[in-house]
Length: 252
Ligand code: 5RP
Image 1 (tube, protein in one colour):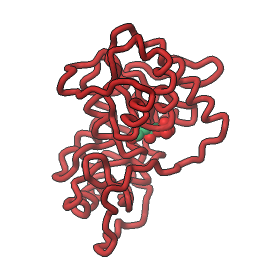
Image 2: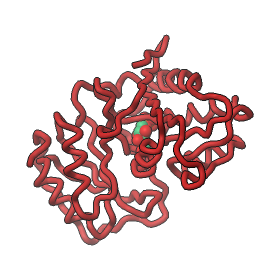
Image 3: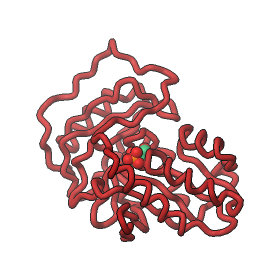
Image 4: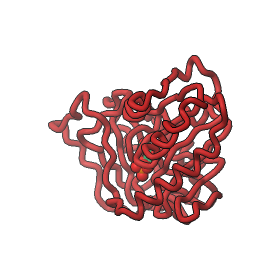
């Protein structure tokens, strides 16, 4: 079943000579270079999200530049919270640098609150995530959280998901197989994010040229490909609240 309308033409070209660089920290691809006002919108969204933090909470924390603002804001009220569960090594490092205790999800149980950014958000609060390659742990924490507050700048709002290449985390030996199946299933163009290894030791395939009219179906279909660890669609479990940074921030 095709669940996305194809726009891409080029085929995925697996190159066996190009190997992922091990131990390389995941980096965010620069999709659009944020200018000052986009950064300011991210900061304003992050500051607004602090209003959702209650005394004694263990806060689930996502990954990315918007979340970095949230972590910095969280540091101001760190005496009020019990700690944080982190979705990436990058966020863990920033949380610890601020003296915020980072806890294991296995020890905390479900969380009351998860705050994370997104690469795209549609009017139903369904998201594309994974620009920072942290999608698997982000998805786990989102699932474990009763309230998912997504913080974005206005550029992330789209009528239909797919303008941002859809990240898919894949076990390395399944990279080519998964790419062929993604192409067959969606018609989108799978591109290996060469040089990026996730915190889980896997690789990322970015699927270009999609117009995702049924994100729930696409999330389900792609998740079934052997070797696929996580699909960067957060549709089955969308955000509960979306804060769009601005003056003032808009809460959806
Ligand atoms: C990381 C993510 C991020 O939330 C997403 O890439 C948004 O990043 P930024 O806040 O830097 O724009 O999904 O895997």
